[in-house]
Length: 68
Image 1: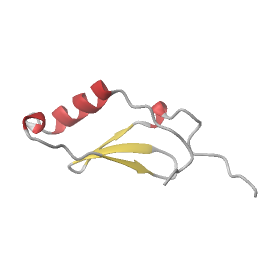
Image 2 (image 1 turned 180 degrees about the horizontal axis):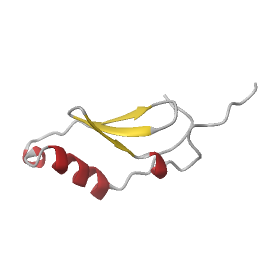
Image 3 (image 1 turned 90 degrees about the horizontal axis):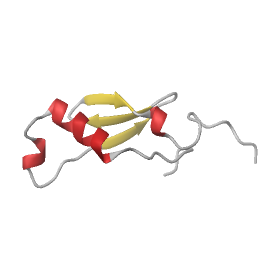
């Protein structure tokens, strides 16, 4: 579901974050990461750790309200 913007997150930043949480993470077949769209921030989440990645949103976040 689109929450008002597109996030272009460099893979190196994801790798650095995941390895800071679990140095052995990339030795497994899969790594489950999530993006959480809060009221004011976009967070990269892995194993209970969070990193603010709002600055990687292509559009301003949080989105401005639109009247239909």
